[in-house]
Length: 268
Image (cartoon, rainbow, N blue to C red; front, side, top):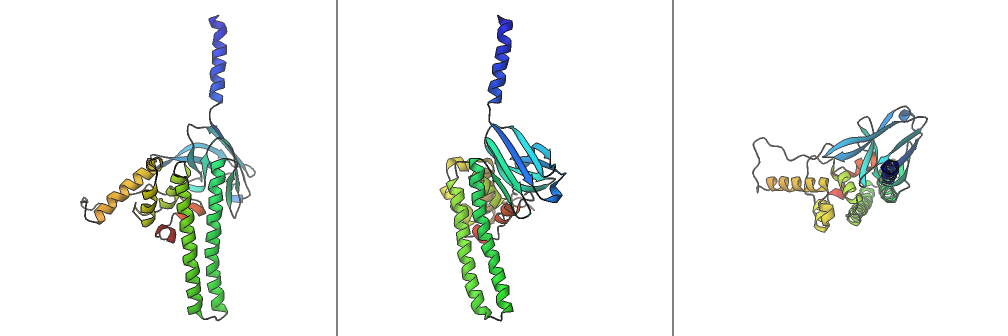
């Protein structure tokens, strides 16, 4: 009887294991310099990117698959260069990479994240169009005082819309991985953690779930320490530098643009 039960128990255990959460990333690319290259799927762990999977790009196709314990943000890297972010979640995740854009779709959080990226990119395109209008006005001999006044007004309007977009997205996603994930993208290229008005606004609204995210918690703690040092409320060791944020990856264009602290959305 024992000999009979053993294979049944083993089969049951295998079945239960196979029913766990799994991801399946199916990618296509028409970017020539990706073909034949190794791609790495990495997640942020202890403020460092750790590889969880890798694959070759063969004839414009690549594929990652595996299991996971919890939904989390990840990045696809080529060598040390980040190609694009995505969410590791249950289901088939479809990636398309070409010379003009990168998209991830097929699962709820990835669809939501890249819908946000598309809106953000539309705003950046409108901002770039202002530069074209400025150059065109010079060539047409327009009154540049009037032109610049109008362009500055439009730039301020777009900056406010961009600010509202990022803030609303983070606050609407406090309790899933997207809120902390976009917060990470915005702040990762800061020279050191700082309490900008945008950060203070976000943290004043934040839920306990958002505040307990490891990166958010660590960033905010260091930003408070740096603020106290700059305000003379806390002593700093001789020759000490402000507490540093984790090293930033060479991120994909959209997250990298978002991460520049000098941009209006970060300095409301």
